[in-house]
Image (cartoon, rainbow over all chains, first blue to last red; front, side):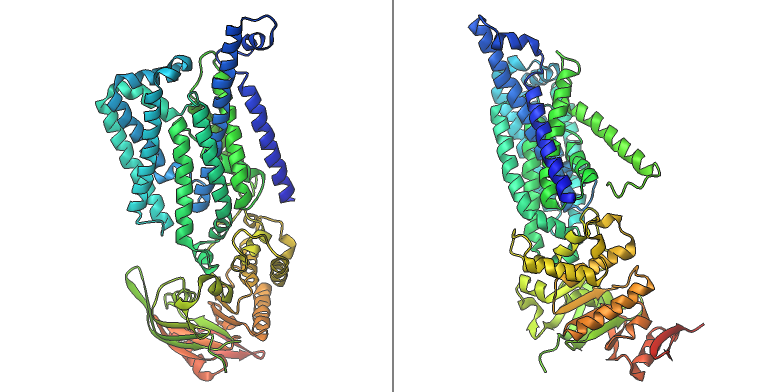
Length: 359
Length: 255
């Protein structure tokens, strides 16, 4: 019974993802109708046709697919984090990757000064055309800085926790690293107020700059991570019975934890570097799946990925559509939706109904 | 006679800087049920965890004639099954999935469950009367029902030696009696069972009793021996007395 439900959910999520991808090519600041005619109409100026075609293939399509891939990475990372820490409130940013990426971006922004501030400004306004080519190197630098920051922060967390031997110590170290790096980020921003706006855009998360390269990077990374996670899934099931039992079942805990932390860091770091800190997707995606079906981790990995992808693709669509031709930062949309979802969950749990262990 | 299930010499162990076990020497028979009893903080669970290889200890431990550290990990996991206490977070796994985890030591990495695995899981779940809920998530079960599922998980390993830490926690009297019959059946099949128990009257049904006090073994002997009973009464400060009742030994409180 569970198996059939899981299969339905999986196919449903794939269908939703595909539907959102199609919709995603239709929504944007240039609108849908304005593109139909130049694309398919007869006797259109080839320049206009070319322009419309480029909007769809070079901006909207990679952006929509990229939002899906980033969501899939975060959903997968969330499922991994919750399995590894055996805590339903664990989220992919727990190991310090988020604060590390923020610090990396803050330092990079402070280093390039005002120029980057403009990037941030255009981020907020949704003027993605003009700056796509102009600030390519700045963008690349920011992405690199975010990824490097995330990786260094995770390494720092691991060093403080003296390896992956102890889950609680790992969790505490992650929190400590988050607080300290957060303070450092504030300090950097204090001394370079011109980068505040750009930083704000990063902290809120945005999908507006995803090109084909970014999409390819995230999608490739997701393929790799979901395969590794699938191979580790049974160990996560074993871990859910407690570390002692897992050990008694002959699971090599230390290498397993190292592989899990590595996969988690790679998935989170890649997503954060491309899209900034998108809230709640990593936390909510596995929860939504678990609320619908009870499955072992092997299936949870895939379903949480598909759920995260669908969530972020939908949020991206909403962000573009809600106040078009302006757009909202997608992180604001996910935070609002995610917060609403958690509230609803709490209400449902305290509403006297037996939720059957939703969390 | 073959090697004992466990041969332990000069075993010590410490937790968080404090020494818990001191100079323990022990030989546990195969095909027998040994119960470990003693007051709170006597080191019963620690001893069991060290025997299971889950905690490091100083001294020498031999499992079935081979030093515990010399066993390759998968082989040891097949020979030794462990049931801990208060361990569960696996709310979302179904009962069947949980029991199937007991087959992990028998399965190559990534290989699907074999026919033998399914048979073993069904047998284990039926023996703890948990087969009927195999599709239900663990989170939807009561404490006693969960305990029976976890017991089935430990049985599904089909190991030669079973170590159980307070296996009767949350079980109602009928299922405590079922557990007793189950252990007898396991012993009749040639398995070795070692369990930490707080229910002294149940523990008195075991073949051998290890009475612990302050990290040492106060007494190790047959359950129906008068010396064993005296040792029991002594470590519990004569607040219990062992009586023969309806053909069984029972520990009654001294008021």
